[in-house]
Image 1 (cartoon, rainbow, N blue to C red):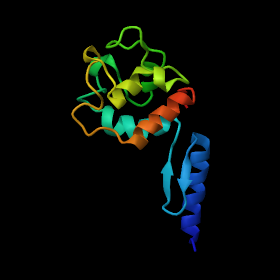
Image 2: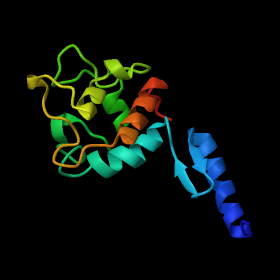
Image 3: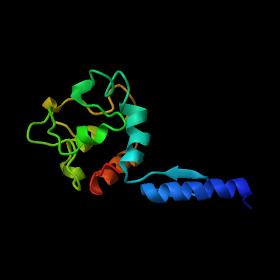
Image 4: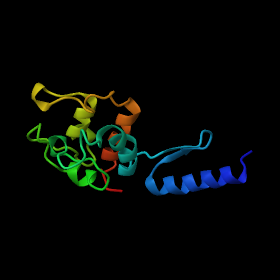
Length: 141
């Protein structure tokens, strides 16, 4: 049986997630922000991409910043520098988005390296989170 504090925490998590399009696993108390830029930012960009050595700061890799508040405008409907004729994120179309190719490692020789660079590859669930965000329209939240 949940105590008053646990009920309050789960209720707060449910309210937060319902506004951000996620799910709450009440058994474990974990919160999953699926299909939102907030979830992608927190679970992918902040942990694997938006570091000073990569896509953050005054000279982000490839000119692409993935910092909070800047990632959406840097990705959505933006031409891919490494892949002429492609866009980084095409709202509603993950399979036409160069970002998905970079994350999945489906690249031609002249399109650079899979991302994240010099770090463990993203899990299928993490890639799925990015795919859900793009498929859902790649909104800024």
